[in-house]
Length: 204
Image (cartoon, rainbow, N blue to C red):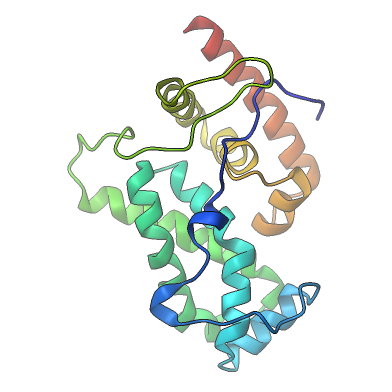
């Protein structure tokens, strides 16, 4: 996909969630190039540092999936819940190469549970997000929320990858690797989603 006019929102979920406080994890000694599969196997055997490293690698994906479905303030709260649910279930994951898609499914289920527990009128505008910036013109916080809500109005196939790309700052290949989608699917969904988003924004 070529260059687009929307730049990433400043800041990322990784900066906001540097540690999973409730698990007291320390993954500083784990080599950064170790494969996810090795980390998952280690975590299944009780290595909490390995799980902490998986947290650091996947927190942006989890936050983006939640942000596509729930208000911003709720997304931040639910990130911890997703990983806390994942930890005791990890031993049941037979195919360790499917950790990303498996974790993504837990995040989507958490978002669905949130809506079942919450009043129907709960607004996507609850909470704030970092401001969106255009390369040549600033977009303030209010416009940033409008843009985020415009993304949330798109079909599911486009909403999630757009937020992962332009809010969480993940590349197309990263999105594919983390969620289990093919590179081609991610590329097509980003392109079509951006076309729909541009049209919505121009109409605004």
